[in-house]
Amino acid sequence: MSLKCEELSIFTEISSVLHLPTRNLQQLTIQSWGTKLTIGAANSSVNMPRLWFLNLSAVSRLELLSEGFSKYPNLTDIDITGCGLEQLLDSHFAIDSMAYFNHNGLSHLELPHMPNLRYLDLRDNKLTDFNLNNCPRLEHLDLNGNQLTEITPPAEGFKSSTKKQFPLRLLDLALNKISVLRENHFELLGELEILDLSDNKFTTLKSAHLSGLTSLRHLSLESNYNMELKGHIFEALEQLETLDLSYIGLKNLDPHLFGYKPVNKQGLYEHLQMAHMRQLILEGNKLQHLDPRVFEKLSFFGYTLPRP
Image (cartoon, rainbow, N blue to C red; front, side, top):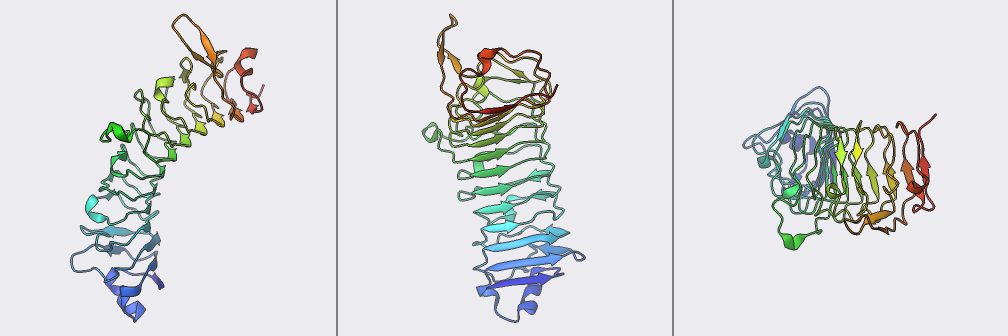
């Protein structure tokens, strides 16, 4: 059973709207543009043991008190987009599958251990840090448009026996303030396919920063101005299909940037198969000369060069 309500102030008002027992309610949508909705006050919960879907994206003012959504154990899909929240606490949750918390004012987020959370959308908040370790099955994480200066990698808190088992497939870190990555930062993200690092503050990137990303297909480094690409940075990305290097201030490309990896310290290189590369974007750079060797090991792909 599903229900759509308008202008509620507390959950207990649902009973008067429904005129039926709430125990069979599975999907609930609330629209409230002129009334503040308060959830989580003591003795204010409604008996909704089967509720799995809750859409509050049309609630302009949401107040979460101490209990939050914790009284609804089967709530697996919740959308609180644009509700004006400034913090989420671990006591608020019983969510364990999909969570949409984007377009709020979140500067503080406490996630409890969520072993089944698969999809987490935190776009356009004010978070300064995020720790992956409480979401061991997360597949989609969107942190675009926050104020992150770093992201704690899953390697911290994960045993070595789980190496490359973290199932994250999409990680969006665009439009943040990250300037430094640790070496082997992504070593447990062997399943990651899409990584967006655009519009951050990186000045240097080298191969050790991207090690472990053996399944990566799409990488964006766009608009990290004056970035230096160190050595054979892309040598581990054998599945890479799309690479966006636009607007990073490149003046030249190392002739061995693609298609080779070092074998020894004497300068011997061997051919690195990057057979999946299809698109390289170089628009908005300051390239003055291209060595023909740059692309000789990249066949069947298109590239976008800077405009003259």
